[in-house]
Image 1 (tube, helix red, strand yellow):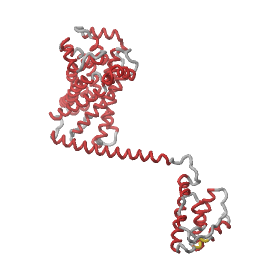
Image 2 (cartoon, rainbow, N blue to C red):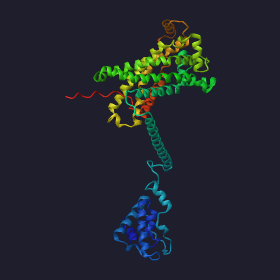
Image 3 (cartoon, one colour):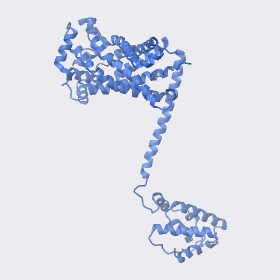
Image 4 (cartoon, rainbow, N blue to C red):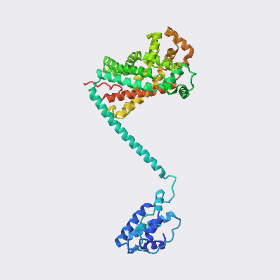
Length: 470
């Protein structure tokens, strides 16, 4: 810095329009020095009086040097060579407003010290989007908190009305039965469009080329109602099946565990899950079979031959008797028992493994976390279920659609297998994996959420037996 320029900065008199603040306010594109120095100048000038002239050299020497260096160095940043100091005429009566940074100076200081935007600089036009997202998050949190409070309030009322539910009592099994009815009835009905396409592709693999092509074709021919063909027997049938399956599973799991003893039950817990789920599904399919027979005929035959569930049951029973409603029971057992065994055993095992790898205990996690684990375990278990039970599922659809009245079960299966071959048993598997995975995940989530609602623990593997006291 040359001595001439420094002397000019240090010896210049200061008035409201003197070069010291003009240089600091107009030459420097940095916001902080402007605000700091202009505020000091304004204070000192107002102390001496607005109409008087305060010599710059009257300021403390340290402040004078600092102010001059800041002004001079920032001027170097904004241009390659500093401009000579030009002192304007004194205007003692001028307004004090120009002691503060100008609008264009502030606007330049927002972007960068050089007055030009840089490639890595934030984009101010996006600040509004961030604000919208933050507001949406805040609203979502508020809604979630309100929903949680409302859930806890309704849950407390339900628990007070039902009374305390002890584990493995009649009330406990009744609650599990109702939870299973909700879980299976609602979820199976929700995926009726997927089930419709799956069933028709199993009956005739050349009917549709894809799910979306199938839904479009059905919608154009039958409207939205056609896409949900079979929802009524699905709802009633799988509500009954879910009630039997979950309620009896909890009962058989406790019964077989007591028969085996605590240590053996823990050691052979997978076998216990398999036995309990198979026993429960055996009974559940008896309740499901009549509705499944009507559903498959409604979905597999074009056009739909029935106007509703009761009409379908009465029509089949009138033509074929009660045996007509249960002619698919054996293949239904063949499909559903392996499916349920895989569903319950793999779910219990997966959930136990998840909690083993999470920090803390299962009881440390809230309702949302526990039901999230239930959904994850259920979805993974559903994928395995779909693969295991798919050949039997295809055979059920074929038997209900093409088995002749009075035809023996074995001969009907042989004839159908001869027509479709081994590859035909796997028609529609990708669709069923998506459907069953989602279905099973939602079922376990709804079931466990209902158990939480009633003040019961979520489903999971039994804890290890306590060590014997020595």
